Length: 232
Image (tube, rainbow, N blue to C red):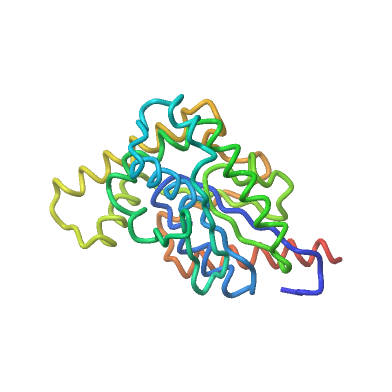
């Protein structure tokens, strides 16, 4: 990567469990770019709503509270952080209660408007450029991104990966993970505001038969190709 060139914005979108966070963070680290985990931002808002007893199933109540949590997402790929009102919430936002509620909170337009403002501000502050991952990076947040990647994998593959991450081997537990992934896919793709979908100019990468390292290497190759074309 030629750091003397204009800042580069690389976005990775895709459904839950495709490895977006792991892959995008490693790409950012290797290329010396900032990293933004937008899913963590929505989880942080959801955690705040649950902690403050906002009814996450009531879009009106969520909308009224959308501007209240102060979310700060650190963009250092070697040690990304996420805080709400100055408190580190990197652990609590991964709990099941947040996972179960985050799609509903993310669907509220006022929440998305606020998060998009923060995400774009992070990109402006990234001197060398940024790798951002989420659900609507290429379609809504950064429509002019230098490279848009849409990661996919079968729901079964994603469930198996998540089970392995959690050390789960019981078939019933794996089935529950698969059901949760299918539920989130439907919620994220079916919402009215910024639904999960592939941008028209995105490169689709099916990770079902690829290792994380293969995915990382492939996408870094795409980034370098785009950078060379832009400079050429």
